[in-house]
Length: 369
Image 1 (cartoon, one colour):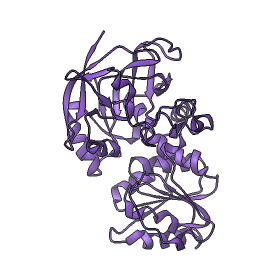
Image 2 (cartoon, helix red, strand yellow):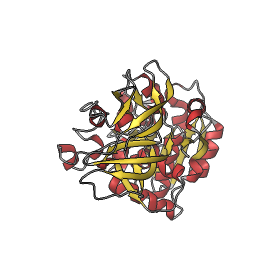
Image 3 (cartoon, helix red, strand yellow):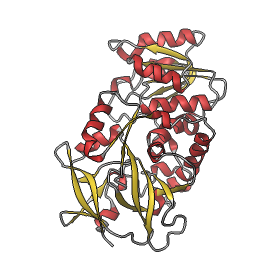
Image 4 (cartoon, helix red, strand yellow):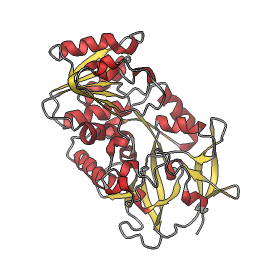
């Protein structure tokens, strides 16, 4: 049966409209999901300028409506999280444990920017196949995805709290645990305390960091950072070029040598090198926010023996990482409910985007009836 779904569709002009689309039954190896909640991320705003029509959204949780031939790990009625970095499980990167940068399916690595399911007509609009953001398009009350994109769960958690695991939580937590492999008893500095930065703070806290220093220009965000585990707060000056003055304060807090780990979570190209200025010799700097612009780096910042990392999606392997995150939530160690500042109806998506861009929310979520 073909379902009529309501979805946010990029209009190819830098904005979007709420449209009625067709969502066809799942084919072999596919799953049709009734979305219950979708997180709003800065990438959703960026995707408005991708240059083609597509269903927005890449953080989702919902219920399996039906499955296609060959799908055995989920069934109708199962609660699932959606994973946008869909592995093929066959390429070199997948086989060596780097599913987040799959050579066949990842639109981020540039290897496969087209949505094969949309090309086959699974999702249609105005009589034509319609692509979906990162091959999942979660800002729609129904979607059809590859079976590798769905992770079942049975933990008691609101859908709006569950959906954000699929990008912001995984990216922040994974950058600490999977990428940096932060050691217990160490020190960490986090630049930017938005949704991703707060989850870096949580990852550092859960990993046993002794000193967690949050840096931001927004006092309200810093107050929230303390709630999520920051032990020290630095209110930065917007005119502090490269956060060099803030880096001196970090060094003072860390015995004059700098933090063991530094995490950039601002998404501001001019701050791409800033964590290098805040870590000690032989320290590790992690660029979490996905800056892709060309930036200049003073090579003196690398002195000496410093490591600079640029992981994608917290080096996620969702079928293993998502259950761990849900277990941490069940134990009360991972704060997810507290991250949700406000929920919205799909018709109020523009307000959700405006609130995100203005920094009003830790995390905004669209919920579906």
